[in-house]
Length: 450
Image (cartoon, rainbow, N blue to C red):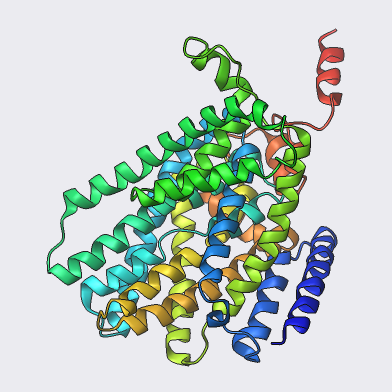
């Protein structure tokens, strides 16, 4: 594509992304679906652009986008709903990874000649969820803050599994044995050490931030520091996404965490981001995610229809197994519509695409099959997720999910006004106990008490 035409396309894409965002507010059709479709059209359908055209810039761009999305999501997370969500997050992350891995591996084992270990390798690659897609959708649909936080944290925490286990299985296939103790130790170290480095980095940066603001044009210094933290953590062999999310959560809550923890260590009070910096990060995330989803669509490969069909079969099974996973893992008082959204959000992202390329690159027999099937799963899960979330929000599909979840007891212990409000699709900020927009509720309670 000529340079001038490329520039025109970039400008038009930015305008279209704003239109798609506005369209989402009116129709609830996620803008992710339109951007993904745009990438499909200019990439695998018409062949105007290929992932190879981006060279080394493509993976770097997608990594930068992921860092921005996780960091910006983290600074918006408050401690109370975060702490309340940790129990549900740990369960749903673990159960979903194990269930998805086994289901995908079993189907691949019976429909391909990959064998047990390579089938498990494929299953572990698609066991997590895409942080970029989940974070975008969870914050745009009417869910309680706790439920959206569980989904966002699940997408980040699942990176621990989807990074450690596929790489360990790949090593095990090459050496001919599986070391369970080593695999477990790698996952624990990847999570804890990455989170600690992100937290320490956030405290250190909050102290330096006041001095940095005395310089000119420093609004980009905070994401630059996040890049440094992410890179260092990745170089050390731990989870960069976890570090970026921990950095954002800590910096976003530094007004609460800073003084009690650090008053005996430092004399300068930590400071947090101002409104101008938060607005800048929000705009940057909007721009980056626009081209991220277009790039994902470009990266999908549709040359061979059999792996594509197998990926579609695995995708259907993953969405079916997600329903009992949600039933046994989320808190009992979760509203049925929130649970329906949770069951509908299991997209796979670029991380899965990168991992799927490793077996073929390292000469593993059947590596091309793994790569093709995973690319198909990425496409199908993204499309299914965007369509299902729309249907849950706007149609009777939420009633079907709701009936299933109520049978197993979800939502029964929640107060009627919360369940009715959530199932009716009210914005999460209008729900009782979920950051009300105004003081009307508090005023009403005071009048009642008088």
